[in-house]
Image (cartoon, rainbow, N blue to C red):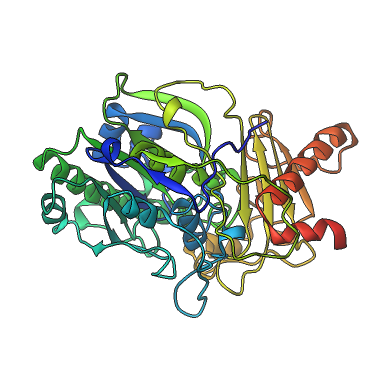
Length: 453
């Protein structure tokens, strides 16, 4: 069973001497799944810069977002705290207007206190600014000036692309022939899906170009070898069955890491990593020591205090160069909103062999994200009167049961729900207990649903 062994409270001690020559670049794509990356097996999409990073560093095969929704996922990436505890329950922008609690301590703030220069560029998508405070806002063309401005201090650069989010912006020379794409098994192979996959893969090329520009800047400034580089996506591809869902395509994502001084390169690492682990790993690299947490006690359901929430992940820095680390065999997911009209709380435990999804508001119909419902792929499936969309029936996509239990070894597409099967009652009971314990130790207000519903 995976243990949460690293916490950050109010008392954080920096080690400036160790951090002084250690730079960090954290690059986040928007809606990029593993099915559209050369390093993960796609032979059509062109991602030479990311593929090279995998050759220089480590490619993780079992890396998971905690939620398949942009703002909520990014809030976890930048705090190490699940969104049900940090307050960023859903989208930050426009009328959705979700934001983190003001007492949350974010990664850029903690690094600045440890002597880092901090800058962000591209898509941000979290709030409030006072919690996720960076010292500068940069663009890729101004990155070099930022790096050169003060070589005596290490830098932390967080850069997010808007691609490959819909409407799939791309350069004309990167167009992909729909006939050449490989349709993943969780999507139906129809012309409408192929057309959108071709646009999606062309948009991924734009991500790779941006990443390549960033790497070129690091090399020109002589900082590439001294920089921890982390590449990942906030959630899976913008297609039904992936984004806004907690099925594998939505939360099992690319993670590529290059660590300075890495003795072994081109490693494939099978550790089960969660996005809640990213902040503690970067803090560990930066030399920010963690004070022992105060004595733990169960969080009273539904009640928050003014205490700063402790980091709920753990550093994987020490196992980066391993291929099959032990005791990295379990992750959790926590989704509550996407758009403000899309209330559908789900809590998940995922082991090496099984996944349990608790659809807490299951009497409600599963709500569709507006862009996915209007997509050519979904509307094409409806117009063709398809019985299934990938591994699931069209009719079963919206009404969902309270629990979904999948044997991932025998059913990797999560098509056969075993929750009502008496033969799997012991597995169901065990995983239910794990979800409840996860909610209790991470201060999830929705844990109260075990008592009242």
